[in-house]
Picture 1 (cartoon, rainbow, N blue to C red):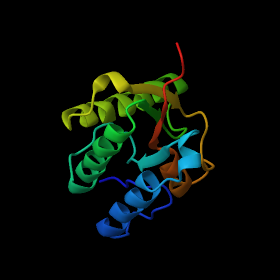
Picture 2 (picture 1 turned 90 degrees about the horizontal axis):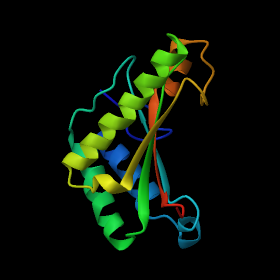
Picture 3 (picture 1 turned 120 degrees about the vertical axis):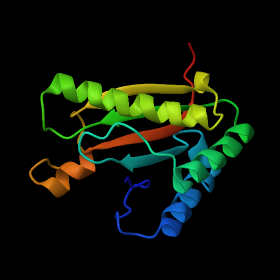
Length: 152
């Protein structure tokens, strides 16, 4: 029901998705670690807000937990996005629900809720035009970024 990796076509095999997660999240060069550690995109269906637990997401969460143990100062930032269908206020809240629900999934996988931050950009910051169904599909997403928490 969802695609887990940026630039991965929905029809690709689950093993390819798993490999791409491993390669891009957990083999990041040390220089990059000082900036943004990892950025993952999960694409969603129209109006989808929930996340089904599946082997791909569970594998991602397991590896993420292991990575966070070696980098305890990292925090997880989840931002929800939508396409332009609907009004901007509804889209903001759909994006926020997407981010919040993915946080709940990560917490259910024993990741500390205190290091997970959620927000929404709704229909703002599209990664594709919104002129066709295919383009709008790319904008319905959440982005997960690992980075050090800024100083308070």
